[in-house]
Image 1 (spheres, one colour):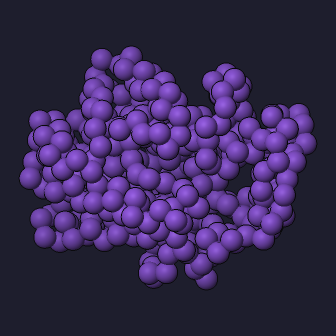
Image 2 (cartoon, one colour):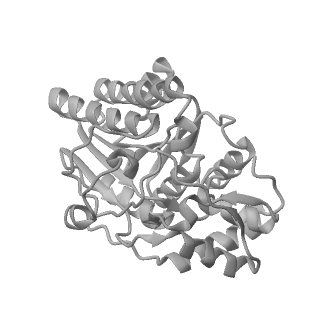
Image 3 (spheres, helix red, strand yellow):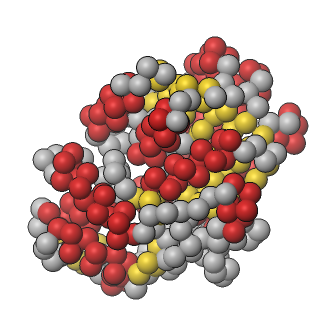
Length: 321
């Protein structure tokens, strides 16, 4: 299979691209190597992928309509894994125009390029944040949306809706995968597992909202990548599916697991949670299991051990910027 992966030099995108290459697919990546966090980290991920003969990287921005038209037309792809985006709920709060530009306009550019090139199938990285302050536990895909808590999830809802529009009008198969609290090797420095670990290592203070009495459905990146591959292999017409673990973890317990790995206590401030943060995220993964055969394998303690091993080898000598 020939697959285009956007955000291929990033955290989740590099794992998806590597999993595809490992099983023998031909992969083209798109990444603009922006400075949201250290471009050197992304260059290192891209260098790993460049070791595979079947990989090609396009340094481009999917906001560039002409570039997307050219790359998709020339690639003759069987599918697109649209993983790239501006992420991070809190960072988006005062940057709505940027998030709309990247996550909405950029997604439409890819949809339009796929339509014109005859690319039949797109898998879209959405987020559990689309559920907002839902009263439904666990989160189910049929839970009504429409009350996102920040620009980031609002733009992901827009992406899901545009995917349906292109499915309805042009027959494009579109699967939106709602990722839940992804962590693991190559994790971004703005994500909580990295922030907690790096703060403990460097004796820095970090914020743990509500004294850790919040719950997150932590999902190992390898399980997420496996779910993306299954979605790429299984066009469903139009679908929205949760990719989580279905086992929420109390944040205070999550910190204790990292403390044990690092061998030092954390230094924390514990302010109330802001309005952008739900108390709990909890994936109902029934639909992904039934429609894709999705079955997460890695327990949180094992996933954190893998993350800690990577951090020690690759990240401990760097700053978090």
